[in-house]
Length: 411
Image 1 (cartoon, helix red, strand yellow):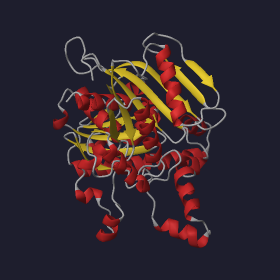
Image 2 (cartoon, one colour):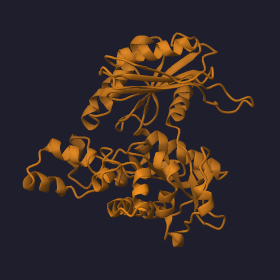
Image 3 (cartoon, helix red, strand yellow):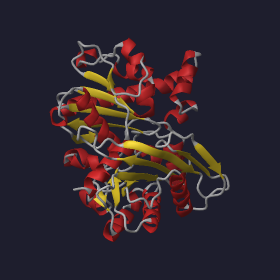
């Protein structure tokens, strides 16, 4: 890496998509931490279909978004198309200013507790974890291999969704099942959305004017996928997702917590196969299963029109949120802040208000006027008298990945 190499390309490879951002990590003018200026952002979707789409926005040049449609056969073709778009803006992958490529990897098991430079041994371990992340790790691996082929000389760094949660104590991470069986099949609670929880908990401490080591935060990452975490002094001590991203909160299409015997019942009584139950709990449950919609905006519109199914879905969603806020208050003992983040958490004021309503005895309250403000900046929405701060902190997983990647290759 050259002395002038300050750029990081962040890749998030899905089964049929690639999200990407190119960031410049030059320190700010005061010589402080890396700024993370975005130079380009984009998305390739429907890879492998005739109607593949690439949307690219060259932020560095202030140009308009460019969109192209046409068949993109595989991830290699997708990344080559991304490289061509970047080159057209003078930001090509062959630039000496490119320091590294940071990859989002969903599952790192217990072995990977920090960002890691990828070599053959690391890639094999990520492959070994495919049975516990069959939907995500294979796509992540494909993205890594493709990027390695395009720039074999460049450091490739894996940043793991599970890493932030590896600080959970054993009593929080273990399921109460036979230990030998659990260990043989790597069954335990790993947690996900870790880069978001790490970023938001740290930003919440900054918002309070304190060091992360001094602050206890409950982070509520509420998007189509949703998770909660209890963060004590900058370290995760509990989180709602488990072996897979299915456990925990009610989500857009996932059930969240459910009696495991429901699966046996459906197999015996409804004649459903394992795959049928998997699809039901992951894709046909949650909000969409309850009321047919997984868009919180549409659900709120339906509630305003008197739709009882939408109201019940919302109430179930909020009830589960309250339970986790209460549980994590007990786990932490002292809570300094509750932080809402991700698509629903950042934008749905009614969700935030309902989630803390009735929890005044726990020190929680929301100021209606502050809660109604829409902003892309971290902000407090609790009244000054509230014992526990309630915050809205926009997440930035790509910046977190870029920061971790740049810090590692410059260590």
